[in-house]
Length: 153
Image: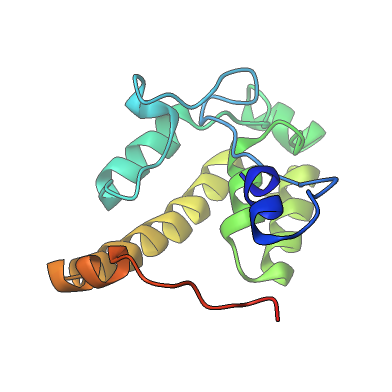
């Protein structure tokens, strides 16, 4: 969209736009799809739905057994819970601790998923509370045709 809009605003088209996409809960080899409600966490999901989706569908980089996991640790490159925590967990120190412990096998998949459930449930609940405060008048004012401010000088 930036490539289309920039020239209309009198600017050069950008040469590079970096975008990060969340993987589907089932992993990098699949994609999120509206036809598969279990492929993503939605802002309309409740805590119970988030917990069920993460526990059942979030692809794990952990090993097949606890013993093997304790010995070999997790593969963080394919673990969906880690990918989501990379984006949503605000505490960088906690994130690094989780990664270190999980990769070493001292933290299990269920523990990582539980932390993700906590983070996502709070985020979604906060969004739902804010969304509930939006009135029709606020939407009308936002959508009204008006001159845009000259942000570029």
